[in-house]
Structure formats: C-alpha cells, structure tokens
View (cartoon, rainbow, N blue to C red):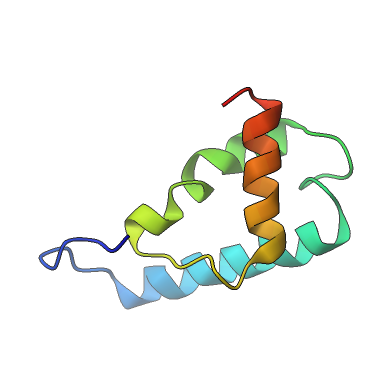
Length: 79
C-alpha cells in the first residue's frame, strides 16, 4: 500500500519513522513484547500506529520481529 501521489512525506519524518521502527525491531528481537515477555501498556500504545504504518508509506518487509509482534499484539487484544 502506498500513499496517493498527491501525498507528500517530509523526508525527515520518514527518516525518524524508520529509526523508530528499527529500534522497535531491535527490542522485539530480544523480547516477545516491547517491555518484556508479557503484553503491556507499552504494546497497546505503539500498536495503533505501527499496525497501519504501511498505509502511510512505510515498508515493514525487513522487520520480521515487528511483524510478528503486530500479529501477537492484535491477538492479545482480540483484534
């Protein structure tokens, strides 16, 4: 999914967005959820935007742990 062609992304915000995804990927490679092995408020807080990041033009293909976390977090919330 890509944003419409009229939608212009600020390159600095894109850079910071990918930096945040990389930091999450790093943590999720170490722990099952963001704050450890149990689902927590940290997961709820970051799931809302992360799960729809592709709709904003962010590609998650290279983020295996992050994609697993999205699925597991959605399951924990009954989504």
